Structure formats: C-alpha cells, structure tokens
Amino acid sequence: MKPTLKQAVKIIKKQEKALSRKSLIDKLDDVVSLLVRKLAHYRCIRSGKFHGPKSKNLTCTHYWSRVHMGTRWDLGNLDAACWFPCHKYKLEGEKQGWYRNFMINKLGQKGFDKLEMKANTITKFSSSDLLLLLRDFQKQLEAA
Image (cartoon, rainbow, N blue to C red):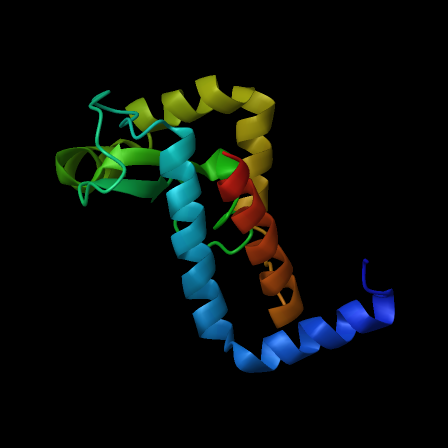
C-alpha cells in the first residue's frame, strides 16, 4: 500500500535528518557515476576501450564541471572515459575541440546550447531535492 502524501513527507524529512547534505551529494555522485558507466557499456567515449564493471580506470567525466550544480547530474553532461589517459590528459584539454564537437553531435546544437545555459544558471538543491534525485537515479541504475 502506498503511503499518503503526508506520510511520504514525514518519511523524507526523517531520512533527510539521517543524511547530511554532503553525504547525499557524495552518494548521488557515486550512483550517477555507476549509472553512466553502465549505460556506456563500460566503454570509453574517446578511445573506445572496454573496461570491466569493476575497473578503476573507467570514470564518469563531466563536460561542464561538477561545480555547475545545474548540470552535475544531468546525463547529457556526463560520459564514461578512461581516467588515464583520456580524461586526465585529453578530454579536459579538448573542451573547445574534439570533446565539444562530440557533445554537439551527441546533443545537437540546441541541446548543447541548452546544457550550456543550464550550466551557467545558479542552481540550488534542497536536501529533499537531493534525496528525490538519489532515489530516481537508484531506480534507473537498477533498471539499466
């Protein structure tokens, strides 16, 4: 039986108190990173190299850095890439070259422009927002 709205709000508030804002953000980063790598079938966008699910060398890369909260967990902003050398030495230096062109091909020019606008918009998430995002991404991860 589904909880009523009032019961759901109580549950969320109780869980909010149990998890600090920082721990919610850290957990979201972890879950979204797993989801991105799984959706990419553990393959690097730059080199095309396959990594196993437990590989430490495959990472979740952000076109717009994590400091931009509006795009931090936007799947359009995220890709799987080898940590070394693709992410560390190549992608970060190609945000006006190869990586930018890749993103425009992936999203289309309008989608890329929308993502850029979203990255440059001040975005704040409440603890409740973070908890809801976390639950949604956990469901997506389970379904992927």
